[in-house]
Structure formats: structure tokens, C-alpha cells
Image (cartoon, rainbow, N blue to C red; front, side, top):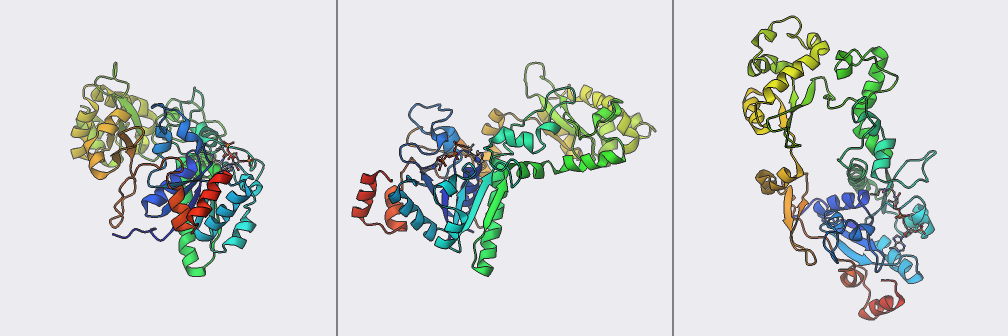
Length: 416
Ligand code: COA
């Protein structure tokens, strides 16, 4: 079965998380991803958070599936020549170096266009053009600078970063989207182009509803926020809203049976207007169906604490799975708080290939997250990440046409 991108070669100059997330997705869509790494060193994550001595870390292996690894010192004359050949041969260069690093290496956008006018050059940077464009950025900095941290957490607590890597992996996703659009555009025009995904912009895009609320503040208090029901006035900026639902249907995280000892014995419960009557029956408050304080969504807004308190009295008598079993047939939207342990063991995620077990020569079998997007003509078989320089010979020979003698001389020079 052919795949969407199986005619595309990617020069993967990425490291850490954001860039590798992007190129892993492209590899899963069939692209030939050639990961270029410094000889003897490689992507820094290979040796970060090591759990098996001597083996590539899970940090690296889980972000670099289905790629080939070429070691190359792109700062030596011989290495630069190899890199030039790669630029001429590949369709897309993806990089997430610190600002200016590629220019310092001698591969500015102008130079890349000279070498290959059809090249798409895609970059993750911390910030777009502006006062912070020269800054190095990691995940949590992006979450803070992109509006996520100021709107996450509880009103009376610190700003919080989230476990979802919206700065790194989120920006990698945005970049992959930009690359696919640029590839389609190139089919029409023959021209390559630059694709830039700043992490701040990616996080802000994912926090779009919070900028929505910032503007709604001008029209009065945000009535669906708990603080409105608690009589706490709003300030000038979108506040942190705890676990309030971000949409028009109020929701909260509520305790379930066992919460005293199990940190994940909770459910998310949404009081969707369409099923209010059924909620009243389930929680044993049938009189709330017609009561003027509870019957309509606007009437309920000032009473959300009381309403969720009553719902929680009921959820605490059930396990989070029982809440699902009772509410789902009634179309009441609820969801258990699932731990990583529960997700790792979930059979349906194994069956769809979203959780996969992969074998690795240095570390043995480990779990990974497979491709989260399913295309009917693009079955994804998750392959282990490459060892450092594992494919150097085959890439230099088969892709770039170097002879065995030339490869030996490149090795001698220390360029590969
Ligand atoms: N051969 C020779 N040199 C290489 C090389 C290779 N194959 N690969 C990388 N290098 C060099 C770079 O050219 C750079 O050299 P320079 O500083 O002399 O120009 C050097 O290695 C270090 O690169 P840099 O990107 O600065 O790495 P860092 O570890 O200092 O910083 C980040 C890491 C993530 C902070 C930084 O890369 C960054 O801000 N990236 C953009 C935003 C981003 O993606 N952040 C999230 C990462 S998940």
C-alpha cells in the first residue's frame, strides 16, 4: 500500500522534542526521514533521563521512530559538502536549532535556495520575529509565554504548566501541517518556501478560547467560571479557572469511590443542558427539573458550586468506571481520569495501534505511542528508533552516491 508522503525525502536536522515530533509524524506518513546527528554525540536526548545504562533513552526512542540516522559534523569542510548534497537531494529540511545556528553553519535560507530552489525549509523557534526572536526556548517557557500557564491552575494558586507538551509536541504538529501545505503548494508552483512555527504562537493557538474570554470580559463577568458563582470579581485578564469547562456547558472534576487512597479516582462531569433532566434523575434531585433556580442554564450559573456538590455526592458512591457505565447510555458526557498506567494497559488503545510495544536491540521491548491520526490508506507500522549513525553508510552510498573509497575518506576526516 502506498503512503501519502512516500515520495518525499526529509533532511531531519532536529533535536530534543519539538522538531523530532514533527519529523516522526512525517515518517509515519511514509516520508524517508534522514536524521542528521553530530558524530559520537547525537541528539542530546539519547542520553537524557537514562533508565537503561548504555541504551538510548525512552525520551529519544519514543520521538524518533521510523527514521534513519546519519552522523555528520556539518562544521567541517567535508561535512559541509555532504550536507550540500543532502540539501540538493531532499525535499524538506526540518530544523529546530537555536536562532542563528544554521546561518553560522553556512546554511542560510538564501544559500539553501541557491542549492535547491524547490527546498522547503521548516523551522521551530521559540518566538517569531520581535523582541524575543533570538531567545532559546524549552517547553515550559513556551507554555508560560503563550498564555497557557496564566490560564491554568486555580485562581488562588500559582500559574501552572500542563503535562501535555503543547509547546514542543504541539508546535511539532503545527510545523507538520505547514510542511504538508508547502508540499502541496510546491506541486503547483515548483517552488519551495520557508515554514516557521514559533512555539509561543503554537501555544497561543491552542489557548484560543482564553483569548476569546479575554475579549468577553469587556461585556461583563464570565458567568460560566466558578468564581462568578462564588461572587469573586474578575480582574483585567482571563483568570485561571481550575477545572471549569472551557465551553458553554459547565463541567468539573469530581471525586469518585476510592478517591481517599487512589489519586486518579475522579471523573469529569459535564452538565450539558440537553440532558439536565436525566442528570437530576441520576443524582436523586428530580425536583430540580422544574425548579426556577435550576431548570435553565442561565438560572443554574450562580448555583454551580451547589449543583456540582450534589453531583459529587452521587459520584462518590460510584467508581469512575461505574459513572461512565451509568451516564453514557443516558448521553450524559462524563470521562474517567485515566492514569498513565491505565492507558498503558488499555486493550482498545493496543488494538488501534495508539499504544504499541516496540523492540530495541539495546533496551529490549518498550511501550510507545503510535500515530494518533489514522488514514485508511496509510497503515503505520511503528519501527524502532535508529542507533546513532546506524544508516550512515547506506545514506552516503545509496542516497548521495558516494563510493566506498569516498565514504572511507569521509570517516577518516571525522566528518561522519
Ligand atoms: N554538526 C556540527 N554542529 C552541530 C550539529 C552537527 N551535526 N548539530 C548541531 N550542531 C551545533 C549547532 O550548529 C550549534 O552550534 P553554534 O552554537 O556554534 O551555532 C550547537 O550545535 C548547539 O545547537 P543549539 O540549537 O544551540 O542547541 P542547545 O542545546 O544549546 O539549545 C534549544 C537547545 C532547544 C534550547 C535550542 O536549540 C532552541 O532554542 N531551539 C529552538 C526552539 C526549540 O525547538 N525548543 C524546543 C526544543 S524541544
